[in-house]
Length: 175
Ligand SMILES: [Zn+2]
Image (cartoon, rainbow, N blue to C red; front, side, top):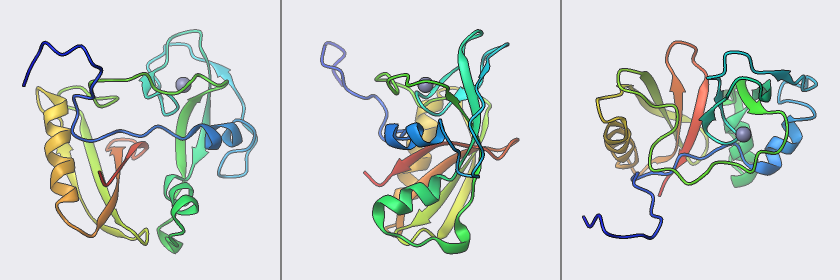
């Protein structure tokens, strides 16, 4: 592979999707649990922001809101996940942040981190999953695990979650 190219090109085989801008605008008013959004100032930083797929910095205005990724995806595609619908806490910027910058890495990844890749079919039903311990080169681990997931023709969507907190990190759709 050439290293001389100057065109921006994602180095990852799959695309990590942030929470869409239109959904963020709604979550900044009322979250997917029906609660009002309550912004606060990040202290330590390092909260994984699902709006722009980077960690927060101390002093930034952020909010912890409940988000239902499968329900939001289903609203777009017409799927009916029924009981598979789930919601959980995610950090987002309190104001519009412009979304993720082009990146050559998967977000929130570091060697040794534990992730679950949960697979869904086009109807929004879970069709398996796997545990992934990120290797020394995390992007290779994600590339391989996601390619493996989409090798199953039934898989339409993958949710990447942190193991310890169970919280949703990002979504990957069939390429
Ligand atoms: Zn953001």
